[in-house]
Image (cartoon, rainbow, N blue to C red):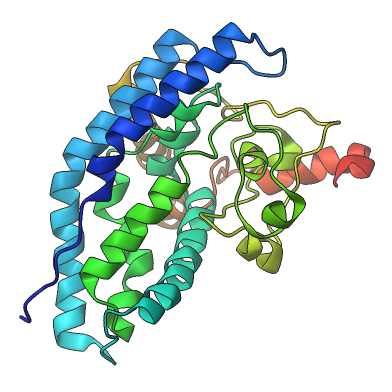
Length: 306
């Protein structure tokens, strides 16, 4: 194995920034008492912080697996060798963001991936603490969407660094204290307004705006929905889990998914489909997925789509 360059663990370095930003937002939302902002609920915020801390500690183990997989492909199967240079980081920026878009989109369309991603959507509040509400399980398998990067020749260290940069960028967009960025910025970049839509349980907003850093992917692949004043965002899930217990938050959807799959009288095919079909799907046709809810809503509210 070639000698590896060292890349900093920027997530750990960013923790003081997270704390400071949380304090500033908390001050704004409590002192100013903005009517448009829900602010913080103590139990909810502490649940989110606990999920974030758990993600960091479990991440030490999951990152070993991720790096092993990236190096396995890079050392044995890479098609090219992309040098570590400024221009390769530019290429990687777009490649990583493209990968994130499809990971994020599939995480809403496949219940197996949703079982870990649902954690991030489980809060009925939207503030910077919500950004810390991260999965404890997804890090062990979600990296499959990035495996093509070492295959084409990006160094694993570069990939891990860019993935961390993407995660850091997405921290600041979890807020209601910023309404709109400049028009040119809203057109290209993911923003608080775009991401509020993504965290909404309103039928119009379900499974929209999967962007990491660039909103262009949603516009290109037909999943973009602007935030509109006539349809105020309602945060959380279509069916909220109703708990502040971090362990339940981390694993409740895994339990529900396996119950749906393995209980009752079902064919083997239907049991497997509970793992790959979208959340809300039921083998007897009684369930409704996000697309169903959205189409039903649009029949009577077509004028509010944009």
